[in-house]
Image 1 (cartoon, rainbow, N blue to C red):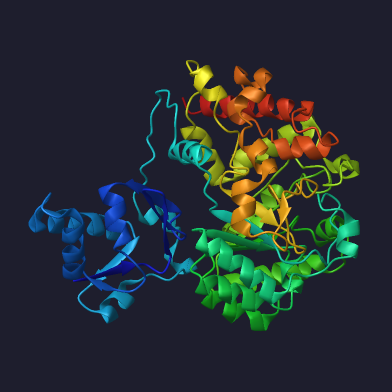
Image 2 (image 1 turned 180 degrees about the horizontal axis):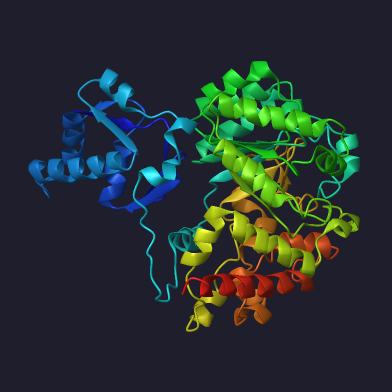
Length: 485
């Protein structure tokens, strides 16, 4: 018997832990000890199980019999195959024939495998994500980067956090420099890369960079408005097996969309590109940030996305510009407007409404002392953003917090030795004492980067708007759940 990864599966190792994820089913698993040893035997090349058992028997010496090793390993790989992580077969050709390629005709792949989420009314103090984040706090592991390959953009969206001055004087990262950074990221065990801008399809070498990411076995996402996407590029994107392309579509009304982008004809080009990508069986998501100009049209976006079998999502908080200019926040929704938007989301977004029904209860007996020591998010712990000029900053939108520059220092050195990263990694929930016992904290979108941009560089000053939205969301979720009790 042969065994190998599926084409949509990625495997990485962080210290003694083995991690496997499937970009199509959106499922993942984390293994330690024996599970991690077994996972190290798996690759994209089909291998004979007998040869793997021989290798494992040398690792474990006489501590376990070959028969037990074989039984345990077979149980391990067959379970992972059942959930579409691995492929087994008698020949390489059979393995290839069993591998599943993304197609909209398959339906929602998340429903093709078991969901191990616990459905419970009990208080659950920790999730798998909490566990991984806690491990990264003890020893940061760079897993994900967002690559802003160009600062040029063909739109001037009225809500954008990137100052127009930067777009007006934009530049591109060279292909050679991009590959050099990707090499360093890969050598550090990096997993996920997001290619963005500016507008990423304005970069003349976007396809070559995409292909290089695939060569380095990275999980790839693309953020774009798709206005500059060329038909000739679509087959290459399909061949690169991207995890998804996230496209910005603000309204089904062309006038409203174009008013937000300030680019006439952008709606037509974006919508046509979305439909071409879907026709080519490339995973697409729609991002539709909501503001005063388009607050009444999100349900139409959801209906459109549903008709294409793709996911749409929104952000109705909005962040100030990276240079501390808050003028764009004049487009932010009021609390009254936000309430109607959340009601629309609950009513028309099927995935969201189902999630609300299953949402776990507020943890009344939370260990506050333990919670206070936990990190707010993964900033500086497992990810960061790289600009086209080589500047590194903690996350998208935080461009005024420059951590280092990859043209001056190796990526690994910046990650391991930066004082700025060290300070960010030490920020915990305890640095926001007013939030520790807040009854709406499970619904809160408070973010130190948003705080920073909105309050002239003060990341610890919380906007009142975030608190109001959190309590509003809590109330609306409670009302919705009570309808089904």
